[in-house]
Amino acid sequence: MILNTIFNLIFPVNCIICGKNGENLCLTCLASCPIAERETSKWVFPVFDYRHPAIKKSIWFLKYKGKKRLANIFAEILYGKILEELSDLILMENFYQAVLIPIPLAPKRKRERGFNQAELICQKLIKLDKDSHTFELMNNILIKLKDTKHQAKIENRSERLKNIIGSFSLKNTNKIIGRNIILIDDVTTTGATLAEAHKILKQAGAKKIIAFTVAH
Ligand SMILES: [Zn+2]
Image 1: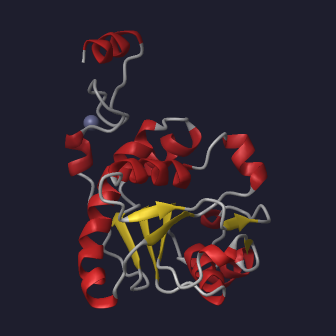
Image 2: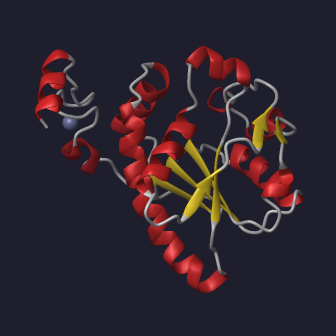
């Protein structure tokens, strides 16, 4: 506690929206973000509406301004959402012992950024889940091959699909045969990336695949 206080005096952490000292995104600003309401595939569960400026800005700060603590905040919210959805799925569809898979970045982009934000979120999810073992992390299964153009920069939906098809590859597929999968990503726009990951994991023998994202 004292250490935290001293640390905060030397390296103050402020809310990127309102400036309040304490966290990169304070609870008040977080609570003001609207939840995602636009339709997605029924196996995709986004939390927030990406069109809201505070959400757009915080995802931007996580990815491009190195505010990695935001990944922890998002993970805590996602964890609640995952447990909520799983409580039904475990009952109805035996969705046990899930494998957590972050949507990967192409190696070049990961090198440039220094991290994969989806992986940071997954690492925090594993910490939050350490006593329950709801899922295990496998970040060596789904591989991004080509450095696709940013999906958000492509206007046309069919162009977005073309851009993403064939961009993933799988390793260690024996580990996911018959397993339930939870995909994690920061943002889903058209859902093309998640759909492509879903397709190749299913082809490789995965059981049920669902996805959670911070925003849509
Ligand atoms: Zn704030």
